[in-house]
Image (tube, rainbow, N blue to C red):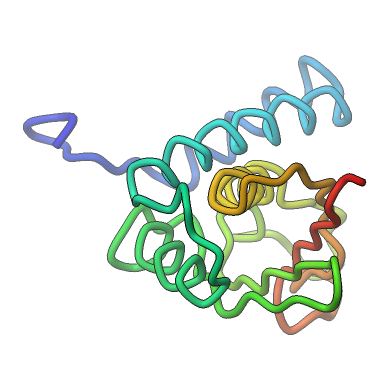
Length: 152
């Protein structure tokens, strides 16, 4: 435990306020770059903590991410499923930090969450990816979907 009285968790409201504050100070694009980079770093260190450095099974990666990011872990999001279609990997998430409390139709993208998932995948699979947020629960999707294409 990192804090004796308050524990390891803080409010979504406070984290989202930090995101909005960064967007106001840096601009939306620069803030997204910073948040994705921060998430990737967290994801890579988490993969090491979880012993995923030599994993090749997407099912194993999904199960460990589900535990670490979900209800039993940091509550960043729920990882519903990971699938692959050739060299494309899709990660289906729900209840993401970034989408919480947003109005339907919001243009908000999951930046930190995308980065965290991205970092885990890169570390676990020992590959470099290009990632993007392709479907959103805020814009009619059933899940927030992140797609990763391996760099060639």
